[in-house]
Image (cartoon, rainbow, N blue to C red):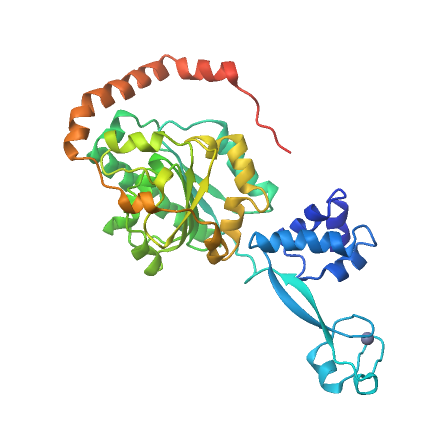
Length: 379
Ligand SMILES: [Zn+2]
């Protein structure tokens, strides 16, 4: 019954059918021959085989060898092998003289992990429909029932230029996360949240992990998008100590904002473009993304769709990604600009962010945005 409802909801496409089966963890094992029979001839073995192989290439499935009867091709268990008789067609292998055959099938590696709840920390000036879109995609689209804490620290512009403001924002973030942990536990959730971070939020989170006041806080999978943390940042110690399960640094191949960050923001760097040299971090490049693509409708749709980058990172064993990581030679070479550069540029940075703040106060960016606004499209 389960397979039929999945089949009916998949609209004629074998690839969509098997993706749904994997996402919903309906069956532990996916055998193209059995699926073809179950689907009532709707899809051929070859179609299903091809769709499953594609998922295996994406790291969502691993291959297994099933032992089958040489007469009727149905599966044999170890008892059947010991008795040398097929329970389905009664073939006696001692009589036929044929040994059992094998057939390739598929299964999800190590199963799929659960998302308990999630913390989202955004960038400096990101407000608006993406928050709703993200929550909606997490809660409905993929049957994630995880509650989402979206940490709002208000508009930070000139404050981003000063280390003392960073420290204050880190303390506020840490206390909010800690109270969210208590809240989640009171509703029977585990203490470990997965985390999605954007831009200035990546820097605050890196500081939070390093802050001794918040050593009690532990996290699951961490997604960095448009990161402005230094490319030589030491994440590995937090992974090794178990405070963080795994880190995905999603880089935008066209992100030029992160290249400017170290000229203005203390302790920052262009890791959202160059990646991290730390071997514990999975650095993945989205070639045509700029700084904001990740949180636009397109970015959220692509990354949280089934088999999308974030969807897979949140669900699958982290080692499923090793083959897709990018070259981080530039991150290993990176050196911070001399401190004098930030000091000399400070009046310019203050002026730029100050004028921007003034325009926001006058409603100018919102007005410009309204000229080009398109509603979010939901498939
Ligand atoms: Zn048989």
